[in-house]
Picture 1 (tube, one colour):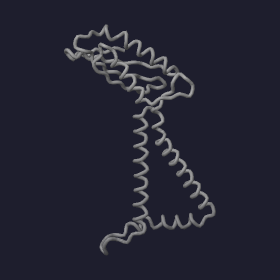
Picture 2: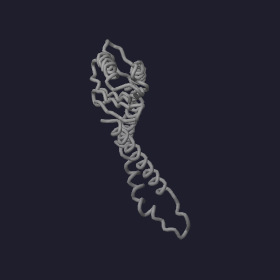
Picture 3: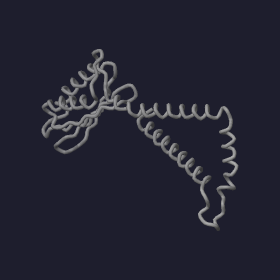
Picture 4: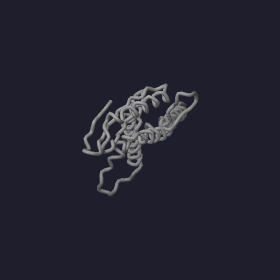
Length: 192
């Protein structure tokens, strides 16, 4: 699942849980509430009068406490699992490296790629972003070339940078999406 799908699923789950809690609270409040005025019809006692009797009968059964405890345990376990999955999202920012048991933070790798690209003589500015695309990694770079620099002068150094990045992140494949911006006329050239 993509992060966008997970976000939609989380929001849907929270909305359904909130609406269910609100509905249950309204149900409980309307069962045990006196009418607002003497002329107000007492719909709650007519509509839910039998519901209170049914609840009383259920509570008298021997299996009722076990079912309530079991349902509460399952609901609490699911909520705890969901909360742990939400908290573990920060660990996905770590990327494994080619050497055994070595990891790096995604932002640190983005910063290193940006600084390495800026050492190239033809590059005036660079922005890098690394995202996950399934099992592979996707590198998006926006490179601003110097005024008098050509695209051909920047390509060999960037090709070497991408080769070293692929070698460093050997378990994963890195797909690069590079956008070149010329400082002279701000024309964008896109290279994949």
